[in-house]
Structures are given as structure tokens and as C-alpha cells.
Amino acid sequence: MICVSGAVAVVCDDGRNKSRFALNRRNQALLVPPGLWNTVEFQQDDSVVIVLCDRVYEAHDYIQDYAEFLSFRESARA
Image (cartoon, rainbow, N blue to C red; front, side):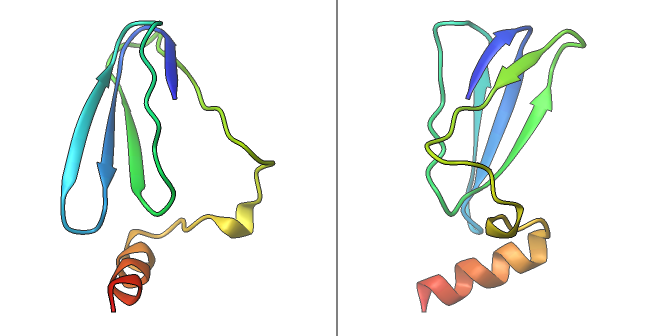
């Protein structure tokens, strides 16, 4: 993720711990590995975030519900 305008905070959550990252300069980027829940919080109205990915978006490959995500993470730990 790269914030090309404005400022955002990205919260990454592994189901147990949360980390918050500020993106507010064009020369910063954040790599979010698979298996994390992430939320982008726009800090300014003019904020623009670019998300780069190594494959085409497939909606079925994403978990949209946080409770389902927590269940997924717990089963991965078992």
C-alpha cells in the first residue's frame, strides 16, 4: 500500500494483536502479508491509497466478516 496523497493509518490484525502504521509520505509503502485483517483509516479528506497486488482480485478469496476471520485464524493455529 502506498498513500500518494494525504495521510492514512493502516491497522493490521492477526486475531490477537493489532499494529498501526502511518502512511503519510509518497516514499513509504506497507507490505501486508496474507492472513491479516487490515483496515485503512483515512486521516484527511484528500487521501488516496494505491494497493498493489501480485494477482488479479478474486472476491471469493477474501474474508469479508471479522468473526469469520477470527475463526479462520484459530483454525490455522490448531
